[in-house]
Length: 118
Image 1: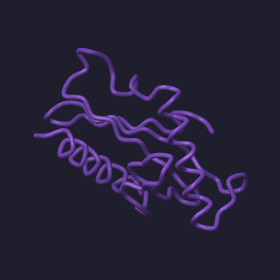
Image 2: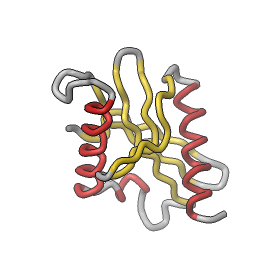
Image 3: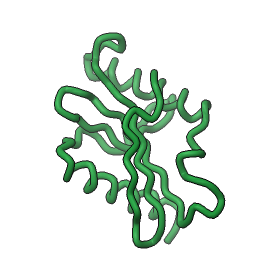
Image 4: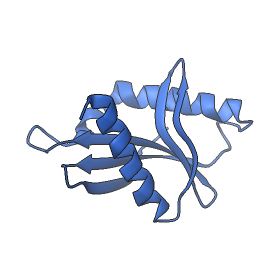
């Protein structure tokens, strides 16, 4: 499987996993000049920006470790763009930044709520 295919596969697993837990899909692969957010969902009244990470194994570290300060900043800027273009105020819209980690060919899924803050 190619990198892009693995990413789409991991995102599909994350969507199924989160949907089964009551989250509702708003947008997938939201892009702007600042970057991309894999999934945007609603968790009750909370807007949730989700980064999906995949690794075949954890031999070289957790996929979570790949979300460094630079990546977080890019996600935050993209989320701000999403809020502004959807008529929401960045200071008043309740939102959260989650990470879903998918590991292995027989996927093990881990959901980290509020993985980082704005």
